[in-house]
Length: 500
Image (cartoon, rainbow, N blue to C red; front, side, top):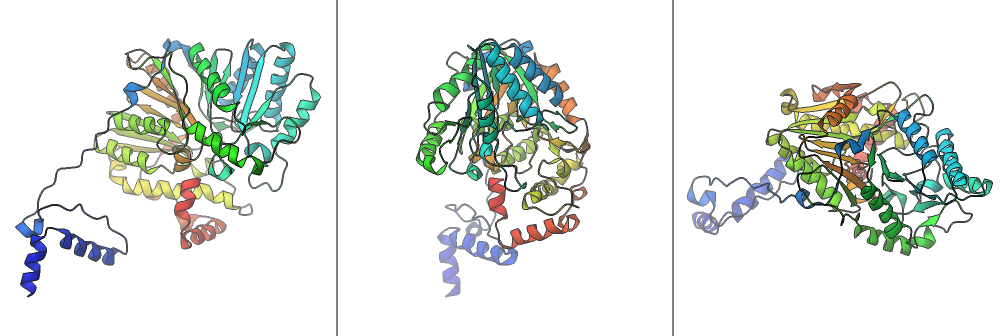
């Protein structure tokens, strides 16, 4: 009887064997095991294992089809520091003759923010015909700093400044989602006349190094009329006409609750939006800059990031301030390492995270974030310890005094450089409105500046040689330990990684 059942099961294929093996593995490990694919002929039925071919990882790249604007390689210049960028921004504003479009997550009420806003009003007063527009995140502008208690937002300051001047500098609040937690305006790139100033930095004392501390970022100036027009057209065509977008420098803006249906419709429109590159060219061997826009999963920017990593053959360099990679990015990095690509990842030390709070200060929930990112990094490094030992994977931790780290971007082989505000985390890939500039340099005309930038950003970094050089839960402050244990116990850690 038992022999008959066994023969029937084997003759029916591998389903019974797979199910039985799956149950045993789950019992032994306490974890779900992925089902093996069923086949028409069972390995067990024929008495020897069937060798299955490795699944192809080929995916048709979208990079060659992307349209971009041709320009000379010397039209792009790199500003070396935050303080230099602040001076450059103020000089550009003062000399503007036609248009100023400032786009940032926030314009903060502090010394640097006041300096920028004063410069905008001065430029408008000197040349009333000047077109001046400022875009900031709707929610971020109407609240205080995280962890600082109840405070008036920057919008109160915008309104007070508006009353002091005869000329107007309109400051628009852009809501990307009905709640800040689920999406913010993370567009980068301001336009002054025909120059695009691209940086991940917002506008405050630390980002602009106005006082004693700075937040390290990347700063690029691109002189291109076509690119500048493309940025301005997106604002004029897709953002300002929306009923969800309102001025924050005027008294009594509408409540977020009253705009919910308009915000949902606006987000839907943004998912279909793109920079106008109809005047540009597809891949043609020339030096080009390609603007990319994305909000929500599977957008054009996300696809380009994954395709860039997938296209790497020799060298891949990645920067991110918050190590919490999306599954799609991790998958492509793993494949790149298997192909023999050398991978460098530059990350801020947890003490260089902008959410880090001195352990001697009272615990705040927000201060646990740097530790969550370090836990994620430690897991990644442990999994890839072999390639770290072989120096095929290099993890560099940046730390410089009490300053903080905000770098993001990609460098692929000697050809592609991605400028972006995208943090390469699940939030950026699914929730926030992001953009990027892909520099395509097929002939290596821009290789010296790009290599100089990487070398500059590598300063003040230390290589992680062993994953256990990174701290564990036992090394964390007591408040952080308690919080992380509680998070793990109620199983919300995975949710936190998706929205932070």
